[in-house]
Image 1 (cartoon, rainbow, N blue to C red):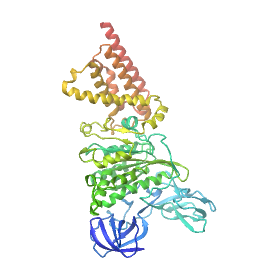
Image 2: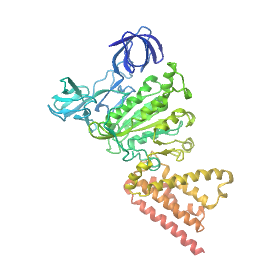
Image 3: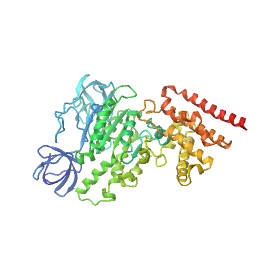
Image 4: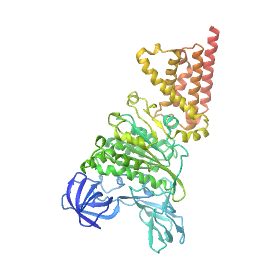
Length: 584
């Protein structure tokens, strides 16, 4: 045990004179209430500590106690379905309606355990020695902690045990004993070890057409969701959490407004998992760290969340981590940096902002785990640039480390066009790697289809600027047709209702059918214009309304209705052609 005495306190940062040597990153307990903290600087005989709780009442002379270990949390199957603060302390099941500063006392969660090895078996790091059954019926593995090896000396029989109860006793090669529980302690700032990183195999399907079809993110990839106030970041992340094809969802509210996070905490337990029909919380971990909580804990919450995600990845599961938002995390870095007297860089952020963002996003990957399984962590981080300015430092640095950039546009949000993702400001670097996946799902020309959609939308933006000057009617008929086709694509494909029972999720098969129909409409409309048709005549065709409403009207279990819409499309244009020929 190492000790120090407080010499000064400045908000969440304090200085203390050491009596025994401390280490960088060492976890400490501060004052009579044993507040949690971490050593972030060592200067001769003085240490600087950031405290993760309210420092009211601390005074010079108070004790700082360290145990030589880094900041760590307990990871285990008991986390699934739980709601925690930024240091992974339960927000439910505590002795008080509020979390008191210091150690939180909660009853350990009890789970049914089934052993998977027997006495004499050799166990290596990351291997499974048993499994537990969660309340939702999901089977999770009990893992040997990384860097622990040995031969099973004794194994507990099957039954119900607390999350921290010893279940397996190991003897290593030197005869030193190790005790294993269904959970174990892991330092949050240290990535969990793996065997190897694996290349891209497929997308993380979100059910959102504009994302899956135009700007996909790979499973184990990195995406960011920047947008100003009111553009729908939180709602979109909630939709992604519910509908994406991940096995486990880790949602961290990092410095968000209390009323928004309160809504999330109320809505998530009530959401139904579309896979099983059971509560979505049974495969979700919520980490809540709102803006009025201690700022230092906000800085730690993202590392806590990604450590939880890596733990479930090591179970051989695919995990999606939703971070809302990394801008608030960067603001916490800026505040603590200012209190440390560090030289500020862009917009007052510390010079190491870029490296911290990189360290966070680089923990996303599709990997081969120590147990030989395949697992992945996909990170989707929201960014809240002030005034929607994408040139500010957090957005700029984030773009360097993510492969999918989903830009939310205030103008689209104000027009009630959701999801308000701007198709010309967004991009995905995983498109080429995922093309073969889409081709195997029924669209051999997916890359060309996607290119034609984006080209059409780009032409629309250019022509709309021209139309504001000369008027839409003054444009040539072919340019008016571009505006019509782009409008049908926007209404029929890009717009998607999060509250519609039919349209809130769109499978890849349904997306392919919709894209084919829209391109066929574009091709037939071009031929009709060449034959003398006006845009007004084409817009009046009955099939146009069907194309604009197909997302709302054709459900997942009736994809054959696209065949009927295809027949109507061909019939409407054939009827117009015959009518024109008769008039001629």
